[in-house]
Image (cartoon, rainbow, N blue to C red; front, side):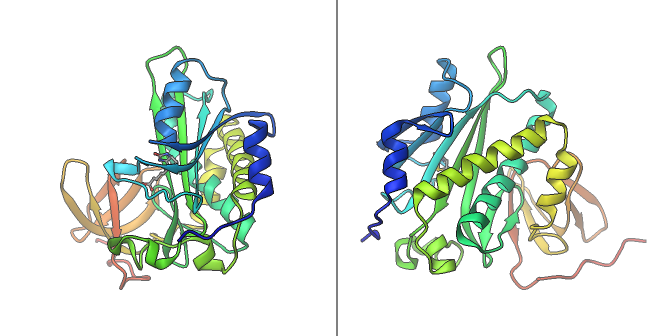
Length: 276
Ligand code: BTN
């Protein structure tokens, strides 16, 4: 049974349909807040609009995965943005969005987060939040939707077997019940701050912040490319564009722009020797 939380701030936010100047659309249940936000954005919804739901029946994750969205146990939110950035810079927003989520989580639960490239937010080595960035470049200005899912009060037995031991919630990691209202407020504020830095062309600064939370640096991993190849190597961290650099056993360097990363749990540190 989900943990019942009395959250007056959440009720106030969804009743007022706005948060700190952002129009807000609330649904008790929706297939995916990202799908709805993309539709609203294409129909001309105001930049900064926030879409939230108590539950999602078809919550979507990266790479075609689904996102577990039990009623009230997590925050499921999407933000409609039209950043004034060159299209080339949009891929770096994926990392920036992960940093924004990480900082918001740190603020509300008081624990330090880790980030697994490109934007999985971890608490004590387990995934607590994920970010799905989607864009539509068909209009006059690029439409961007940042979808953020944060596990707040999910308990171990509520995760499907394949996620147990890999996923966590703020409650499991910190012992605290953190409300959706406070989390959403921190998240929207953190996204605003990070996006401002991006628009001021400070991706280097954003990346510097991101790197302090990087859990992949120096670790052995497998990169599963979108076309089904597996590249085994060691993470050298993200480059200036936000792509992950991986050095394989032959010393060749690969630049991962998308795809999934599987960390080898036995390698908390240790590079392959430098190639000659
Ligand atoms: C991932 O880690 O794979 C990304 C997960 C993103 C989940 C959020 S929940 C709110 C928004 N709506 C969706 O359908 N997905 C994102």
